[in-house]
Length: 193
Image 1: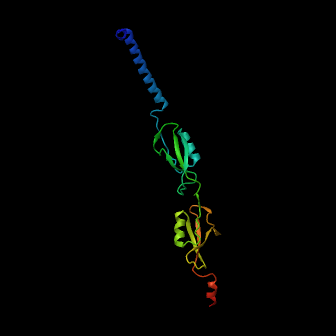
Image 2: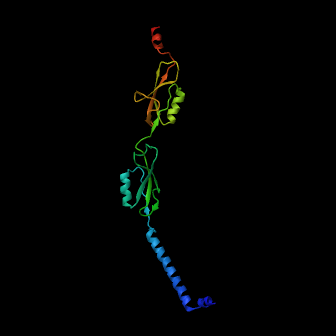
Image 3: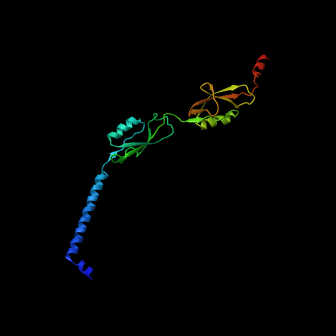
């Protein structure tokens, strides 16, 4: 019964009122601090960093009090300068707060190296699509006396014989030496006749 009597006393209600006022004040203080701490209503527009080098990116982001982080290098894109920004997140034009990290992907300095497949004694019809599918370009096609007409006898790169498994940059030009269908030495015999 003492508890029920205490509920109706003036002391109890004063303490409830003090607790409510302190709770409300703490909530407002917390919300004010949260606004200040999270830079509420601050808006910095993210610049377009595409095709910029890292030094230019760093200068531009430092002016805006933003940071950058390289997350990856993508496959080489010849439309962008080497070691320049290809992609960024957040996208250009978005609004962020001070000290936000901008994630960027860089263009490598060149195409990656790819192993040249073994195309010796494969037909031209097999060799050309295989090279093109790997990203190589087929250059000059020459012929050499050999009875296996239309098959690849040699692969050449910059005039030098190319061994299968050699690593070359994507888009390298590979010349093919094909068999012409004649036996070696038949040119000389035909000329004598």
